[in-house]
Length: 332
Image (cartoon, rainbow, N blue to C red; front, side):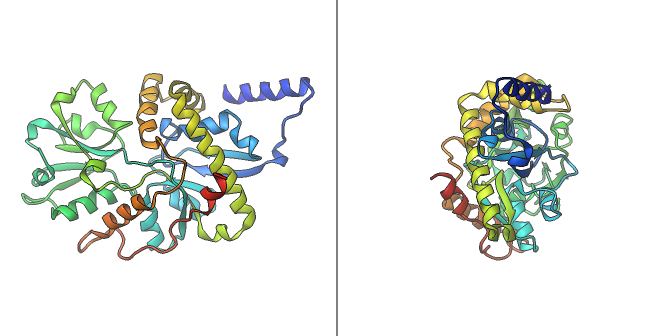
């Protein structure tokens, strides 16, 4: 449907005597998402839909993610020019030899939290001992493991530790009582728990942001070597500028942005009500961001990841893991 509409618009422009830019006139950019098409990535779909990328001379291809897609691997293999990734995952990949660099940070705060059954008696992190907690992996486990290390709670099970359940990207372990707590995002899985008929009064939540262990999410990352190419840098400046224009538009028009996301969802798996709700929560995380990486938030993320005791997420201070060059030029 979306492709047909765009084709019709192009045909209309030709009939009116104003030929649109051809693909040959545009610089290609491939963006690898961290997950499937949903309002978590609304700013990019809005920028594509509203022509912000084309106005910057870009032909952007948005590549949806999924449970079997690791953005760092896609980036390393040359399958994308820029990826979206949580900073713990990206910094861990960098320490292991993949030289990724953060060029922009649209998400100013974290949406990650643990959602627990209230009747388990859990009132604080120390009550996690002896409990089973669902945790996402594929790089998403790092904030949790770092948090538990700071609390001095083992993650190998037992009465004094937590049993980590490798959680799928759903809420079944909580609903089916396989876990006392599960990982949820404010904008996604928490709503799924409520949709299952569970009330907020039956739950207790622990937001990483409020616990002081939040790490940055959904940043834009590229390979360091590409930043040595002036043409690539120029392309990324235009990409970031158009993307942030998309995020601003999405924040101001959440329902319309959610509908745009639905138009691009080729799976048909998303619903309007869920995407509208998600967009409302996402807007809280991007509010006030111009895309620039806040160094205090970066410092907090690094400190959290280094504070892992005998098993830290990263073992040494990252060097050259971010640059302000792109956003500074984009904001001029």
